[in-house]
Amino acid sequence: MKEFTNRVAVITGGASGLGRAMAWRFAREGMKIVLADIEQTTLDATLKEFQDSGHEAIAVQCDVSRAADVEALAEQTLAAFGAVHVVCNNAGVAPGGLVWEHTVKDWEWAMGPNVWGVIHGVRVFTPILLKQNTEGHIVNTASVAGLLSLPGMALYCVTKHAVVTLTECLHHDLVEHSDKVRCSVLCPAYVPTRIAESERNRPAHLRDDRPKSEQDLRREEGLRHAVESGRISADQVADAVFDAIRDERFYILTHQRIKPAIETRMQDILLERLPTNTLKR
Image (cartoon, rainbow, N blue to C red):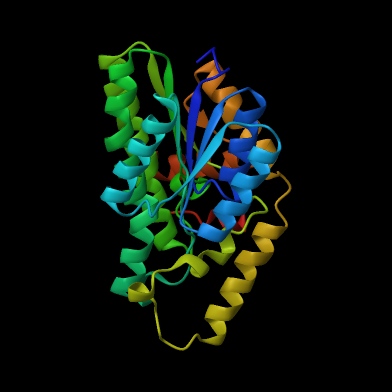
């Protein structure tokens, strides 16, 4: 995409973290903003900030794991602005733990926003972008966990690997059917956001009532510390996303120092050797 002024951007998970930073980055380019988030209070506060700053924006409460919510998000976007040009399927959660200890509820919770949220976003918005016959771009937020296989992160890695391959397949399909709509996959490492507090948005019917072990608590504290110590900010990631849309780049790897770990995993596969624990390298 080369034209951004008066174009429309939809960002899920847009009320905080990476989504909020992307929304501000797009707004500075003169785009109209659609903030979608499951947290109504945070969503209202963020919308007010945009409107008080003179930006055209609307807010839509949306549980991206639900097809009807994402369909309603598209309908409200078109009703408000008549078009959509950038779609960031960004909402997600970050559970951790040993793979055999995850419950069915754990898997259903994580698969909802992390995988089904992206599926619904692609399914609902891609036909709209194609029908408009104008420049458009889809950004799906994965993670470096979608390019690596890490201990204590099976559930997160599974969902983010799904986002990476879904977006790669989407790229191939778009290239065959359009010369105006493209996509990117965002794969950041640790960024200081509230992703480590994902449990705050876990639906009541999917809550895990098991008492947490000391190991669980240590793991959660470790994740919180790792996220908070991230050296690349959400604003810097948002800059990288905007640049990728403008320059039509597919892979958005914001943390260059992670590339050797990705290369090691690729070599493990090609050399048919045992998987390397890249966290210890």
